[in-house]
Amino acid sequence: EFIQKYANHPTYIPPRGPELHAKNWQAEAALRMFLNNLTDEVAEAPADLVVYGGTGQAARTPEDARKIIEVLLELEEDESLLVQSGKPVGKVRTHAEAPRVLIANSNLVPHWATWEYFNDLRKRGLIMYGQMTAGSWIYIGSQGILQGTYETFAACGDKYFKGDLRHKLLVTGGLGGMGGAQPLAATMAGATFLGVDVDPARIQKRLDTRYIDKMTHDYEEAKAWVLEAQKTGQALSVGLVGDIGDVLGKLIEDNITPDILTDQTSAHDPLNGYVPNGLTLEQAKELRHQDPTKYKELSLKSMARHVGFMLELQQRGSKTFDYGNNLREFAQQGGEANAFNIPGFVPEYIRPLFCEGKGPFRWAALSGDPEDIRVTDEALKELFPENTHMIKWLDEAHEKVAFQGLPCRICWLGMGEREKAGLLFNQLVREGKVKAPIVIGRDHLDCGSVASPYRETEGMKDGSDAISDWPLLNLMANTAGGATWVSFHHGGGVGIGYSQHAGMVILADGTERADRCLRRVLYNDPALGIFRHADAGYETAQENAREFGLEL
Ligand code: NAD
Image (cartoon, rainbow, N blue to C red; front, side, top):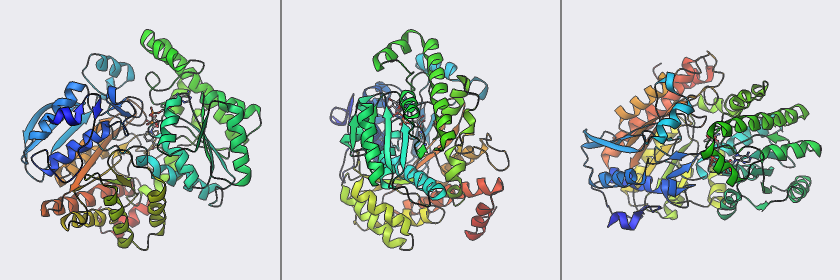
């Protein structure tokens, strides 16, 4: 009955309201968030169980999805489900304060950690690509990346444009699951925006969810719109259907130099993500199956051309940065020797926040009622009245962000703040101020949970970029602390071979048990970020450690 109603492949719907379907709220929370990841409004391709980020899946096959649901419906508070790359493989005996689900996705012994090896295993049904929050069931649609993108664009504005992005043109590629947050983040930060995607359906999705203002297939029309908006200082966002390389080439020909230039095409996956220049979507699909080697070759060459244009625009004055999709590495493999002259966004803009234990803290209202998010927003504003930056963000998000799936909110919070926020949410649930429990999680792109030398750990002060002990320590600390589900993934963001990272989600169901778990997990998790950066020699992290009494 439950499967018929909520998980009739390919239609997945998270239950809403205060009623339990599972035996306890911990399992119910995992169940609802799993279904939320796959629901139409949230997932990029529910029929393939693809949530976002190229081929990032929530479960390996529809049968595995069904089995996960069946097990969660029956799961007791002293049991934990084991998920191996999207397939439920067993239950272990645990206890009420242990995670209900333990997830490992896409992990390979380093010597074998290549896309070729991975894709072969995937074809044989043995493994699944979990991206970051797809396989760990805490993807919340484009809002998830919205604030991070907003913070990044705003930081770029602070660094190079005296904090004012009006009359500034920001150009980028890729308007998919994550990249689709760019237009709204740019306009919220005050810029004029031009985004290019080969797939019109992706841009249409951004129009439907109000993340972008306008769409066209015509370069000249897009150009006229954005130049006019830039002139008048209008924060307008335009989606142009096309190949990003072609469009950058045209901008160069027309002598138009964007003020800010970046990219979020799915470059991390040269076979199942990036679409080579000159191919239609149909042709790309066909070639992918018929001749994957040729496809990859074309993909790498196109990325080299694409990055060549980015470098030219960088020379002409565009503030250019890599946005965490491993474009530089594959462009280099495709023949663009100078690809790494483009800096990564983490060392450029985000690392100072990581040193404060800050990162993409997020929560979802399991009731399904948007009013519950409004209540949490207001409660946070009262809790942190001095945090004007956060208050501005919450007000803007309330006004401009359309929810996808279960109502949720993202807000970068750091050490100290996360613990206070978690306990506050638990109190709201306990006092009946919200209608059902609240789930709290974060992206794996966070201060202490990732080893990713071309992204989160690029250019670490002590050269420790590739050491992945840190995400493992993060996973263990969150498991020991009692998160509600935990995960360890390989290859998220930048692709197989290039990253390892851990995720955690924790439930606020109003109980004292939740208070204890929240106090531990929401202290330990950001503390790991401070430990990691303090250990690498960042002085602000060392100062923060002292301020928060962390024992280094
Ligand atoms: P996605 O697969 O949902 O979207 C990628 C988009 O790129 C698609 O819409 C596709 O049509 C488009 N595209 C592919 N080739 C193109 C080309 N040649 N020209 C124009 N458009 C093209 O992926 P996503 O979830 O949006 O993620 C985008 C990338 O960003 C991925 O590589 C992902 O790993 C990375 N990522 C970055 C962050 C971050 O914080 N910066 C976080 C998560 C993921």
